[in-house]
Structure formats: structure tokens, C-alpha cells
Image (cartoon, rainbow, N blue to C red; front, side, top):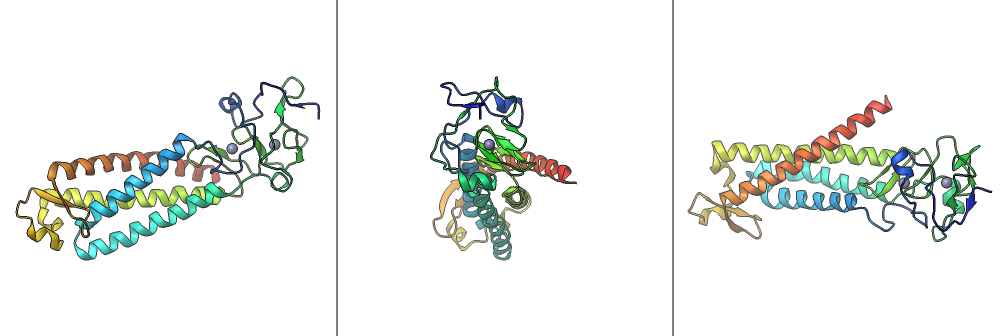
Length: 263
Ligand SMILES: [Zn+2]
Ligand SMILES: [Zn+2]
């Protein structure tokens, strides 16, 4: 194909929008969300997940009375675990067009696109960069530099394209993340309310029997109790609450948007 030349300065292939068009595609097509380089948003989502999991499971849930504690561990743990599984699948799936997955070697450099010779990367259902026939809903992602079946969008949080092969996992991971965040919000609300109206309700763990000062709290119950001031506990709580709130707003908006598009 005349449009595919190995030019020294690559021109972006067709993307989902004009902003994507200006990005320089990777020389070697990306296989999935684990392909380097990792995206900062992807790393940020992992850090947020670890911070939320660590604080809620090791600091706040242990403050709840026994039955509440078991329920919170079960429900929140279930949401976090399922989210992790579905998220990892969405990141690991290669959403490329079947013909690309079967024919293309991800170790070979893709040719560059010369827009002066052809306006679109895909014409007459043939991609001049992947050099394969493609389906009607396929688009060539400029960030991954490959054709993606049922292209929806390139997700920076997954560092992977979302297409027909991993769309369900992507949407499920958003829904499960929201469910997990709602659990965190409910636990934090419970802790804050009880701290104000009945602080002793949060001190039922046997480790509190040796703590005489009511303004001293324990973190990392029950196995590694660490004494701290009330202000530190509340400060961590406010930080986690803000993190949770921002996640609820962003993911809630994302889920509603995708559900609206699917109707
Ligand atoms: Zn392509
Ligand atoms: Zn992509």
C-alpha cells in the first residue's frame, strides 16, 4: 500500500478524536495494558486502590463491633476482590481485531502513516498499517498503534484499549469499583457518626481495655495495635473520605455515561 511508508518522523494514524491524532504512536504496537510504558493514570489508580484497601481494612473496619466488622469485611472484601479480578482481566485482554492478533507480531515496528497519500488509515475495511482486512466497527487506535475490534475508547486508567473483547470487563470493573467505594463511604460515615455520638461503640476491641485515655486510639487492630491521637485518626479518615468522594464522582459519571450510551 502506497500510504504505508517507514518515514523517519511518524504521522499519527486515525484516532478517536483530534486530540489523539496529534499523539505520536508507539513504534511497536502495544499488546495490552501491561505493555510499557505504564501510564501515570494507571499507576495512580493502583496507588489509590492500595491506599483505600489498606486504610479501610486495617484501620477503620477493625474499629467496628464484632458483627458489623464481619459484615464489613465480607461485603467490602468481596467488592474489592471482584474488582481486582475484573480489572486485571480488562487490562490483560488484547482487544485487537482477530486478524491482527493472529497475523501481527507485536515485536515488529508498525509502518508510519502518510496522510498526504491517503486520508484515513482504514479505507474499504482495510488497514494500511496493520495490513489486514477489518470489521465495520474496527478503528486503528493511535495510542496502541493497532486495529481494535468494536473500538469504544482508549482508557488511560487501564492503559489499554476498550473494545468488544474487554468492554464487559471494563464496565464491570467500573461498577464494582463504585460498589467498593460506596462500602468505604458507608463505613467511614458510620465511624464518623459514632465517633461524635458514641465513641465507646468504636472501642469494643479487647485491645482497648489497656488504653485508659479516651483520646488515644489504636490503628492496625487486632494484630499490630499502634497508639495514636484522635486527630491523626480523624485526619486519615478525612483524607480517605475525600479520596472516596472524588472516586465516586468520577466513576459515577463514567458509569452513567456508558449506561446512557448503551440504551
Ligand atoms: Zn490498524
Ligand atoms: Zn488503544
